Image (cartoon, rainbow, N blue to C red):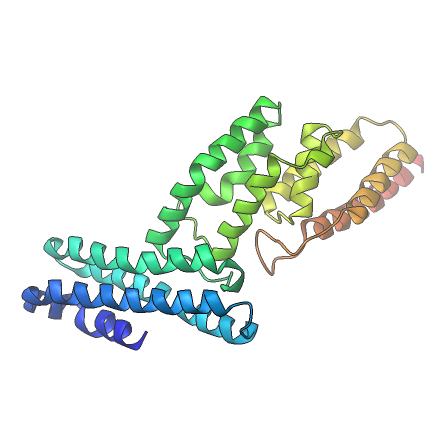
Length: 282
C-alpha cells in the first residue's frame, strides 16, 4: 500500500493538485494499477487462506482495511477543501478505493476489524444495499402484526441522521435481517415474543430496546393484583432470559448485554415492589 498512500497523501493534496491538473489522468491510472495489484494480493490470500496462518492473514487484511478507510476519509476532507472543478476527480479516486473495501468485505468479513467506523461514502453504499432487505423485513413483520414501535426501533440505529456505522454493525444487521424472517423453530411463539427472543439472543443492546422492554413488562406487572403474582411474573421473565441461548454478536460491542441489563432491572423491580407493598401493609 506504500505507493497508494504516497499518491493519496502527497500527490492529491488540493493545493498541489490544482497546479498539476494535467497529471490527474496519470494519477488516476496509477491508483487503478495499485488497486489491481492489491486485488491480486487479496486473491492470493483467499487461495491460501485455508493453509495460511490466521494471525498473519488478519494482520495483512486489517492493514488493507484500515489504510483504505483512512485514505477515503482523507479524500473526503480533500474534496471538501477543493475547488468544485476537482470534485469529480476525487469522486473517481474514492470509487477505486471503495472497490478495495467491497472486495475485503465480500471475501474476508471474518478477518476484518469490526469496531472501525466506515467512511461516509462506503456507509452510503452498504446502507443502500441493505435498504431493500430491510424494507422486506419491515413488511414481513408488519404483515405479521408485530408492534410497529418495536419494528421501528430495530432499524433506528441504521437510519438516524448522522449515524456512524462500524463494519461490525453492518455485519450484525445482515445476519439479523435474515433471522428476523426465518427462525422456523420459534413459530410456536407470538410474533412479538419471537422478535424479542431473537433480539435478546443477538444482544440488541440499544437503550431504546431496554426502555421498550421494561415499559412493556411494567405494564404486564401492573395488571396483576397481588405482590405474589407480580413477583412470580418477574421471576418467570428472569428465568426465561437466563435460559436463552447466546451468540457472539452484539449491536454495540463493549456496551454490555441487554439481557444482563434487564435481569438487573427485574431484580430492582422485585425489591421495589416488596418495599412498596410492605409500606402499604404497615
